[in-house]
Length: 146
Image (cartoon, rainbow, N blue to C red):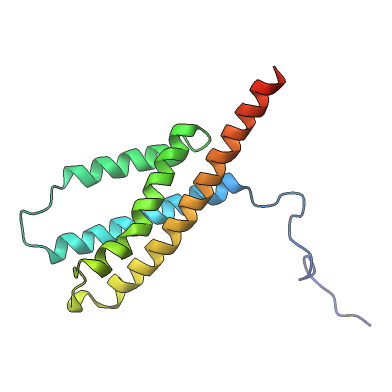
């Protein structure tokens, strides 16, 4: 006699008719990247001398990035905002590794944030570039059919 199984078998996906959509993955990746870059910049502010950081500028960038991610995710401007945000996030590790800005007292969290920020930044950039490519390809094929 077979043991009774509750739910779906392990080998079958839970919802085969509803696979993960690239737009959902892009939105989640962009929001995660934004959160990580906020952690990173907070750490940078705490490690710098007072008066060297202009607080309103990052906040404005965060608002534009958040708006582009949540309100414009299916439009070209939103995809461009997420692409630029992803590239900036992915480049943070390069800036800190070549400029000698990484402090020894930054600790585990700072270094972990740099790795996570780079990975999610690249993932966001790749997904948004893919979205832009599909948008431009659809426009081009739509114009050719007219």
